Image 1 (cartoon, rainbow, N blue to C red):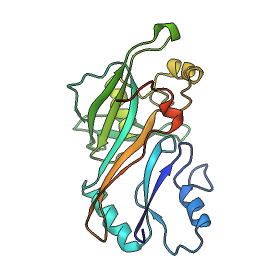
Image 2 (image 1 turned 120 degrees about the vertical axis):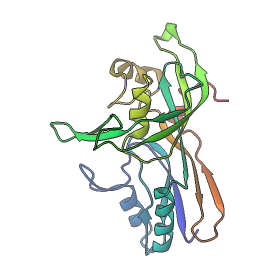
Image 3 (image 1 turned 45 degrees about the horizontal axis):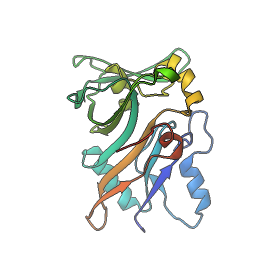
Image 4 (image 1 turned 45 degrees about the vertical axis):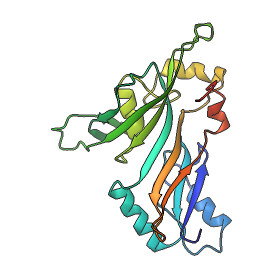
Length: 228
């Protein structure tokens, strides 16, 4: 509408220009819509993540929506396929995260303790959606499809939190099972299985509660035989 635009962005597209990226998703959008006077990202997604992304078309909408994200009044739920069988009773991960740089300057994140002065409180809610049995004939382990809702928006939060529980995301090249990742493309999974599936927010003008859904894209859905 005239206030906000929702995009179902594919994986592999940086949402904005930056390190190593001269032309991101928001720049592409502005070029495609030269008549638009105002287009600004409300939030961000990792380059390796697909799914829902909000763009404000008015400054008033941008401020209103960013306030909602800051005050945790939005609902951001992802679909993530993790390695192993997730315990159904494990529903909350409340573990601080610490950002650091590797020697080559690459940004990474790790879990830390509550007394770490540089640790940021990070809360992730997890719901087991379905369990997929191991496929020994294909040399594949068991997997679990999770609905993951973040209450805080930390860098790599979902990836690090899930990996810290011993269940890294399938295809995650930074925090995952590297040996398994090398085998997954032969079975049809050629990227990290993380998708921004559902987004809930209050419309900045009407006050209506909005829920948007983006189904799993084909490159992920083909790896999951059936999703209830």
